[in-house]
Every structure is written in C-alpha cells, then in structure tokens.
Length: 83
Image 1 (cartoon, rainbow, N blue to C red):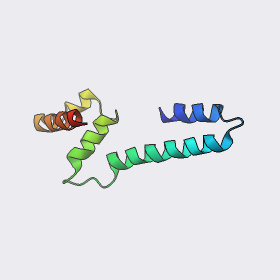
Image 2: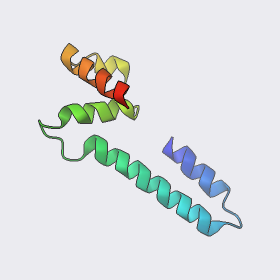
Image 3: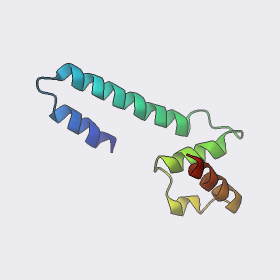
C-alpha cells in the first residue's frame, strides 16, 4: 500500500517537485506514526492496545485475532467500535 502511494507521488511530480517532496514527507510521517503505534514499547500494560492498533491498521487478520483469548477478542472489538 505504501509503495503504491510513493509510486503515485513520484510518477506525478514533474513541474511540482517541491509539492511532491512535501507529500512524500507527510506520507512517511503518517506511516511512521502507525508503526510507532503498533510496535514501539510493547509492555504488559499496553499490549492490548498494540493488538487493537495491529487490527485497526490491517496488519492482524481476523483469523490471527481468533488465536487470542475470547476476552482479548472482545476487547479489540469494543475498542474498534469506539473509533
């Protein structure tokens, strides 16, 4: 997904190189924020929120989520329904 977005930005940059650079910079910042949310500093206190983030960003499939306890699945479902 990210590589497609980068490709689209780079294909359409002629004559607007600076805007394309800014678009690329914003994309990288946004994707980096997602990675931070999903993977940085996993602890016992925030592991459920990391699982929610993984599911929310499409990294964790429904089948993978079913490998967790029913309690975890319900928590993830509740949190995603709030957003």
